[in-house]
Length: 267
Image (cartoon, rainbow, N blue to C red; front, top):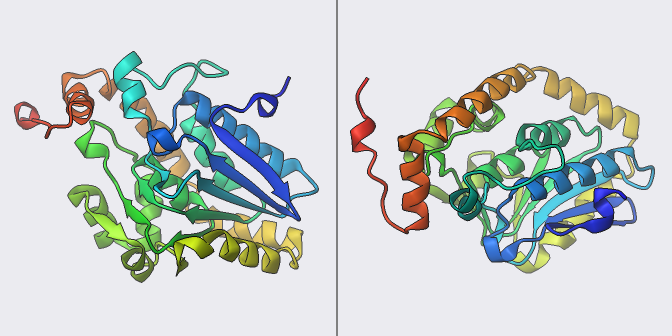
């Protein structure tokens, strides 16, 4: 039985050439655990292979969050992101399949795109945002980071100074601010978000799929080296999450208090 036959964390549907993948954990602000990542990878691969699909949309359930990244409550409960199909937390594989899928991908950002959720929308080819959406990073507050596509590629999208501001200041940005910095392609009223996605998809469905694939691969080539950087960073992150410094971040998050990282400022 395919994982797509027993979905618990996402919804997946195909309609007139458009595959819509919805992170379906609104009670956790569509944060992802290992199971969520497995299901997302399976859905993207299905859309990649399907002759019925020409465009893929990634979004979140409800109107509060696109995704707020890794599930910190899960991390506090079990020390990891829970069980997976392979025994691995396949977040780097998810990044690869979003980026490598030869079909155009649209992030429909319906609310908070924060932390690892922010990285997911950055990796999509296009981003359409509801006017209520919010964007930003959070990793250094919770003892985490994303060095690779989440940083180097982000700098290509918005520029070095703005990318450093996003990661070092951890501010949240409105949809209009995100559009101004080139992080978002278009902002629409919340109620019109999926209608706008449908219109963009329909326009691209008129185009040569081979031409679209080669164009996407050509644009990806310039930043392909960030994949290796990301793998190295995830190796370090796995070790870092076991340190007192990282544990202070996730504990503070779940206790709803400001973290105290002052003991870790030495060389």
